[in-house]
Length: 169
Image (cartoon, rainbow, N blue to C red; front, side, top):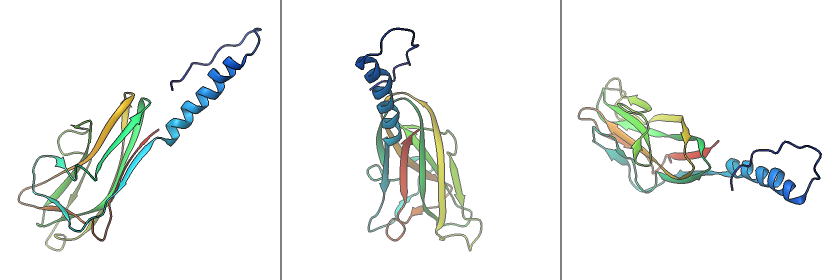
């Protein structure tokens, strides 16, 4: 259902067609946008991990969301934990929209194990990013990550369950 620009009223009679078009249908359009969201809470029996120095999907099935939008802005968020196996190792996170990384270079957010006591710790990681001016239609959002050097980045999905979501606003 599409938005209909409101009518400028003059002295013509009010009809049920006018009420349905300019009141009911436009309210339904606005309500549909508020209800439009997708999310995933991930669990499993093993850690997710990567050694890739280029952005790859964290989990192409569990951390991939499809959302049919009306066109406009979408908030995308992630909350979870990350672990770096080497001191000074870093984990970089990004979002792909329709298989295109949203932010070039090193992505949206980074977590770094700064010293020997920081390696192998489960660090909380959370971000929200605004995807602006997305066209109407079906869109796929994927959580992506990469790591640095000889580090292995890990995500606990056994005891700590990450959440990935998208919401049209």
